Structure formats: C-alpha cells, structure tokens
Length: 324
Image (tube, rainbow, N blue to C red; front, top):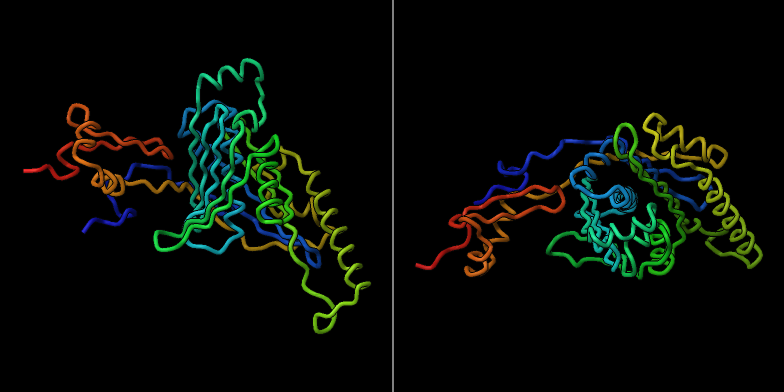
C-alpha cells in the first residue's frame, strides 16, 4: 500500500511557515456587519518568491492569496476553497487556494512577451489590464465523493477587489466591502485583506411579526450601520494593512472602536502546497505507454508542481507497466 501523501518521504523540502494569527474574524455588535482581517506576514514572501514572476504579477498573486484566505475562513467545509481567473491578458491564468486548515498555495501563468509590451506602455497596470477579459470562479471542493460548488462571473472592475465584489453582487446577491493590498518592502512581500459582509438582521418584534413602520425603521437603521462601517473601513491605509508591527486587534480597534467591535478567535495560515511524488506517480500511471515514452527524455520523466515550483524526476521504468 502506498504511503499517504503526508507521510511520503519523497515530498520536496518546502518551507514550514505558519502565521498563527493570519485571520482575525470580527463582528460589530447590534449591527448587520461581520468581517475578517487577513495578514499573511512573511508567508506572503515565502509563497510568492517560489516563482520568478514580475513584481506586478506577484502583487496580484499576493492580493489573491489574501482574498482566498479571507473568503475560505468564513465557510464551514473540509477540503479546499479556490479562486481562479482566466483571461486574455498577460496573466492568462491565476489560481490561489486555501484549505479548511489554512494551507495556502498560488500559481500564475504569464505570457512574458505580452507582459513586457504592457509594462512598456504602463509600468503600473491595473489588475484588469493584467488579466484582460475573461472570468473569475470561486470553487469549494470537498473531495471526489462530493459535488463541487462553483460560482463563475465575468471579470468586471479595475482591481481584484472590484472583481470579487462584483461576484458577490451578482452570484451571491450579498453586499461586501473588500480591500486588498500586496507590496514588497524591506523584509520582502507582504499581503493583506479587510473584508466586511452585510448579514441579515436577527428578526423583528415578538413572534417575528413586524408592522410596516417597524420594518422600515429597522431597514433604515441597518443601512445606516452598514454604510458607516464601510466609510470607516475606507479610512484604512495600505501601510496599516501590511504593517506587521501593528497588531490586528489594535488596527481593528482603531477602525471600529465606536461600533461595538467584537473579536473572534484568530485562525492560522500556513504554506500549503499538497504535492508529493506519490500523487504524481499515480497520475503518470494513468497515461498510455506511448505517451509515457514520448514524455521521457534520456530515460527520465520530469513533472513540475506549478504551485511550489519543484521538479519531480521519474525513471521511465518506474512508471506504467511495459508490455511483455
């Protein structure tokens, strides 16, 4: 019997990096607002520097990682939650995912010539110029024995935050305020996110019955509370969002101390590539013999994990079953 992936002795030596308080959940008491503050800390640098991407692509990847961590932490599931963007721009595909335990990974496929041409005309392109036209998909995958839940929308907006808010507006009909940032500083890449969600109110008067006047007053109060929270969130600066020296509780108190701020239990984030030699060997075993022969060079087949940028080498005689 093959060893489970987590016991596979031939797994690559990947970084053992954990950020204990990577996600700080919170809500505003008596108001229709909950949120998450995400700080990747040095984990952002570890994930992004596994790839030799241009800085603008790494910045987009950092924002995607912070976003997917924030969204995954709001769900109850076992498996992975992924964000995928496919477009006709220089970054033709971007994929970031987060497991239910906070394991993160990232990959972007870039047309280097197209990116060079774009940067020659615009050294600081928007996220939309990088991705071009296409779609954004969010997927919950809980394994082969369950149906995947996926939502897909057309890419809309100049920034990744705009694209994500468009998704929630159209697919979930759910009001969100999303702020994302990623930047390379003296200590390497940092990335973060602040997400607010408008949630349903707790009900009405006794037995859940409301007259029209009471309901209208409640709706107006909730709308005012939501707008106030969004205005306060908009005062957040990129420097504050990415500052490792500014504790999450301090930052959230600075923003929402007058709004009955309540903090939840912080959640950890970690380096989470799930590749292994055993998994890739199983994939190769499904290929026809002729395909395996074609893939071999000098008697070896090389497979790369695009997430951690690690090459696995297999002898041709190690995979598949040759006919007698």
